[in-house]
Length: 205
Length: 187
Image 1: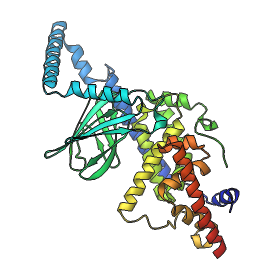
Image 2: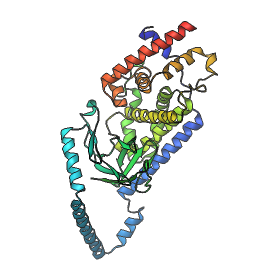
Image 3: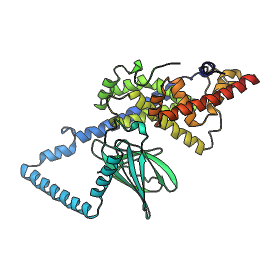
């Protein structure tokens, strides 16, 4: 059998048309996912007329607004000092930046578990043309076991959780929150499901 | 064999504008994208899993994931190739679930139009031969032969090197020829 005969034989395989009900159901569910995504990004952009928080904010007087802003700045400074003191935020960003510099456009993530550190690298062909995306950190914790992933929004990484490999795609929403999409789960701060029995924390860097 | 590629297919005309509108929360644009690409993605999913219900599930999952992750799509690149990639991952997940449930060994009997495979030996032989291929070989074969992609585009969809696709297609063809020749000899 030559290539031409093989192709002619393979062409005999017909594709049964999809069930109309299944197609409609798929469209409906995709549209729900689309609307949920759209409403999230809309909230992120914040249309003052539709957003109750914005309405509440606009009701503040100028002096109250300045007071709240000052409090927010103090809280940010304190939390930055706290994080720096714990040695988390700065080193994570630096480590990711250093690794990205070593593997430009190719780094999917830095995965650390216990004392071992593993680099998740994309194949060679993606090296060029991949922009550096929003960096983020994800921590999986079960008891004393901690697995940390430093990665980027939209870049899939696979981690070993409880002896099994789990692949997930972290995504940063329009509001700057991180959601994790895996094969059988969707994690977000609003829906903090356990992943393979691990508690999850995720944040942007 | 179709020679279109994800970058050049005529289906993609106006695609960039539609995607941009969808990212701007235009639900009509998203619906248009769904209507435009669902048949293509469903066909790909069917050939990837050889199961009608499975293909419907995978195609649905593909568009749900695409809707959720629309912000991550890089404008200017091929939306079609992006969808193929999501569908490939969804097909992989589907297959893994089936393996876990112990259902993957069965060759689907209900996926062929017009009756049981016994009455359509050509279909059943091709189905059985494709089903006998490991997933990575079959996906490479489906993308290159049925979807008409070149090896470089298929590599982008599968997330591997172009040479890997070439090697997989070579091995798939060798195995398919052997399987289908044996079937022809028997009949």
